[in-house]
Length: 398
Image 1 (cartoon, rainbow, N blue to C red):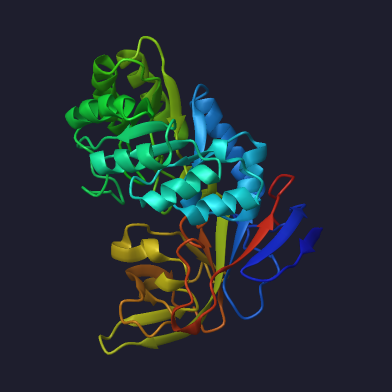
Image 2: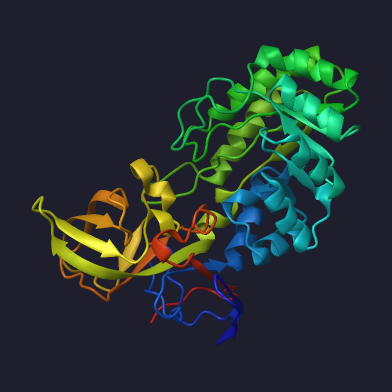
């Protein structure tokens, strides 16, 4: 039984779904969910979100889970995570407003984007936000002037192993610079509370977190009164290849904390992908199949980079696709989106059934993170619609 509460797109709520051969996950049956007529859509299984939070709490029981709202800012996701006692990492005043509209108190939010205008700091304070991240002297001064008495975390940028989508040199300060900045914070009338870092999104090396933890320990030794260690996000999920599971990452982090912090500080993690990524399945349609002027088979979908699949740029994220024709002979194909941009190409070589035809449905798995939040109306295509389901019993087939 599927109970639908249908509202205006792009968000379509589905309260509870007793699975009867439905949502395709882990190589099981092709989905039988009702489609959104004429357009691609994303389904978020809130039960999977719940399970992912539980898994994080098992792996890192002492850590505060501060959800990275940018991964998927949908109201049902935010509401559920609030019920699960998560806090929230917000990157803009827009995300602050989204959280506030869901009933989340500003005291549960951290303005974690180091780049913010003074007016945005003041707005956040008016909304009840009392914790901010910074990585420059100017950023610290803006917080001190516009949110006096707030708590701050200084984001550092050690050299981490490359992740699937690294941050490069955009964020963070040198670890030795953080000592001076945090010392200055107290002088400016804000509370120097801790150190933050991010190992890079979809980090495949569990040892990366120890680099940040070791650097943070040195800063804690030099700045009295620090109490929070923010480990950021970066916990990977499986797309088309195996990755270290949350348990393995948790063991690596716990080991590093034990080696460098005999007395454990308040530990924070900021997962986004690890919470909502595996909860999402994107449903789309083949628009056209042709042989291009390059002699290769081109498969065009009704969704592309601008519709929510921006992370396929440079093929950083290689989603797992399923079709009703799986099991037929396969051959390499170019997969492209529907827009008039020549760069709206998802993958240059992807094995797909040779029988795939216009009108065939395609499932894109583990698409719950960084899809709707990237979706746009470029070329007049509607932003990605979302259905919310809760699978309350075991997945069955047949």
